[in-house]
Image 1 (cartoon, rainbow, N blue to C red):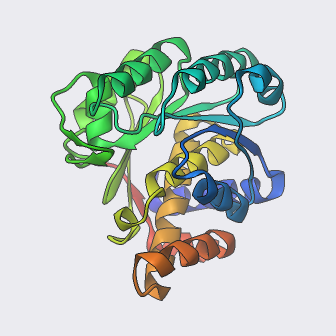
Image 2: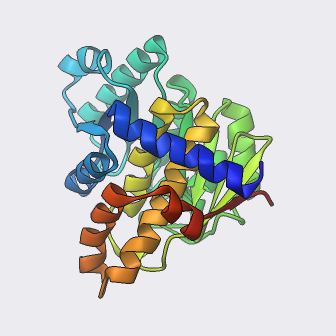
Amino acid sequence: MPHTEHVQQIWRNVDAVRRQAPLVHSITNFVVMNVTANALLAAGASPIMAHAREEMAELVNIVAALVLNIGTLSAPWIDSMFLAGAAARERGIPVVLDPVGAGASTLRTTTAARLMERVRPAIVRGNGSEIMALAGAAGATRGVDSTRDAHAAADSARALSRRHHCVTVVSGPVDLITDGDEVVLVTGGHELMPRVTGMGCTATVLVAAHAAVAASPLEGAVSGMAAMSAAGSMAAERAAGPGSFAMHFIDALYTLSEADIRARVRVGHP
């Protein structure tokens, strides 16, 4: 698909999120709850963040997408993820898995692998090291930070998508999105983004919001990552450093236009 057609498709999904205000349920980590809730609101979606297993089935019944983020795991939250994932699969709503820190500990790696097998998410979004760890490759993870870029993880991403019939997103200076066959590259953003906590998790919830309105998981993943990149570029122009970047990023999501996407993001194929 030519870049111009990609831009039109991305903008349709940005506009659809604003018009439809999809409710996105995130079982996520303590570090990013406020950040990702504000990002969803700025993008036009609606967040809910609940973790009690007793209400999982009820809540998943009313949402448009589900995010499972393993950043701060505990046994009760893991139980809730499996319950919510089963309910989402039964309803046919998109599940987006963020395998934060997969490869850094046995708990993280095995939990992410079990979620892939049992919940069968539509999309998994992680950094290069996390995706390589999930795919069983010899990647290196430093805490929750990546030591591998998207291109280094490309083969692992394709293998993971083929094995689990999902879309895999590898975040980096260039984002790589694949369904196992097609590969799409999204170029944009800014080097300040990794200096602000929660940017990866924010990408995950934006992908979930877009997956709720898009024609396919691949389309939703591409448009969510493109919106993230464009907003990052806009915020960096106004920011003096990481602190003010975070504030301007939320404003950029709120004001994002088709012209911004066209000017600030390149979408193409290898």
